[in-house]
Length: 328
Image 1 (cartoon, rainbow, N blue to C red):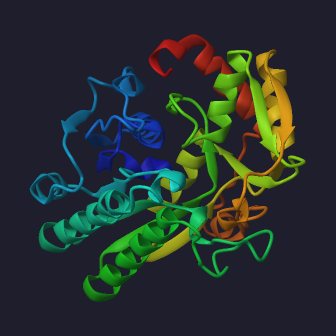
Image 2: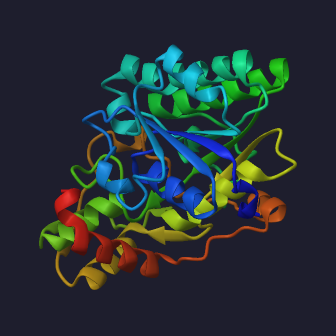
């Protein structure tokens, strides 16, 4: 299916980051013409090293996805726009509500308006989040699950989904949104713990640190390896039946925190784990166990994740073992 990308023009906002750079690499392999827009904001994962192998084969524009004039100029000739530029910490969103809204909502509106005005045929791919669901009432969780976000980050991601729906209804702009579970893998920033629990724990284990887990560690999450995520995302983007769709994008497998940490320690060969009490009022932001129902994406794209957690953690550790100086 991804062979359809050959010769296509694709804009990736946030393309120097974790997901964006991996998507750019895959697009290049399939013969697409890739343009990256990234602002290299200090808090986030933009990293020139992420595209070192393809830097001479892609077009890099340094700029902000909230700058309408920049976005309109870049969108004009694109076949696809993959929007990944975002504030991606649900924890930080509580303390920077206006900035979270500005980065996450204003940017998608700039893209939609630019498409409406100069390129209504372009197809938009959007990275949403499992955080739009809030407290989990049903496991596995399908796309019809109620959306009651517990964080401003989740509220703004859900708002973006609704912007996309509105622009499709009113102007016919096509889009596909993916409610991504817990992604991990090579090229993820490792400077702090706010964006990738798996990546951060790998760093801690590599440094021989003690990894703390709340409660009994039995809370479950769905961890999706980056190469599976990229293949699922791009399969949805190019599918001929896409109009305005939302899909879960995860592994469909639930793994407890304690099992995830023990897998990391085994792969790295160092580090330790300690169980600690839950922090006060943790339940306000704790969604409960989450396992994504992958039935919709599997039935339409014949796609499913292929890398299990143990294999994915091993691959991720090997990457950082060789490249840690570019990510610490």
